[in-house]
Image (tube, rainbow, N blue to C red):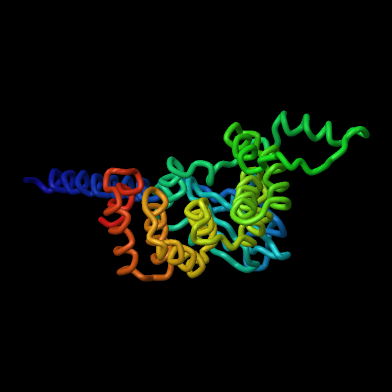
Length: 305
């Protein structure tokens, strides 16, 4: 082979290698670049660092620029989303946006996996208020409106009916009444449903305060839903120890069914957050054993492998 032909062949090979490398880099970067960190709710002040000593303020609806340090202050509370992943910041401080998004942002989060079984726990109203609630509000402001306690009212059942219909504001009103007037397990469940309604209506800070005020008992019928809700909130706040405590308390009651399988999956997330790889694997296997063909079981198997 002549020298010119050899050089031409080498140039062609070199070009192919460089082209392949560039394509690889592009496809390696694209999944991360496609995921933005969006601000869904904010109390206090949230800023990102732009340069060495410059901080620019962010608001609800904004997206955090890629790979930035963010600062929450003013006794802040922020709800962020990165695709299906939800992140809640409950403490003032500095955070790295890349750490919050994680290394696998395109991977379905546990909210999506659990949503088909516990959809009422993960709803979010788009409007925050609906027509039925507006009508009741207008009636309540009338001079002729008189409020009194109705001994025949079933706040829990009626509130759950409105919640299922999408009348979250109406449900919230009934659950709030029930939390004041009912007693025992019914009162505790009304308070729990009140917290869910506040979350759905876009007030996660108040919802968390309501939910953490409850001390459910082992025979409360809503115990499984409550524990899953609290574990979810703690994990999304990176408070893995509290999440693990809540889940351990629930799993010690030897639960069964969907709630138990969901709890074992969440246990794997909380243990992973604490760096306990062996415990994570054990929890995933428990979730699989309770139903390998369910959505939760398949998700656990994928994580285990």
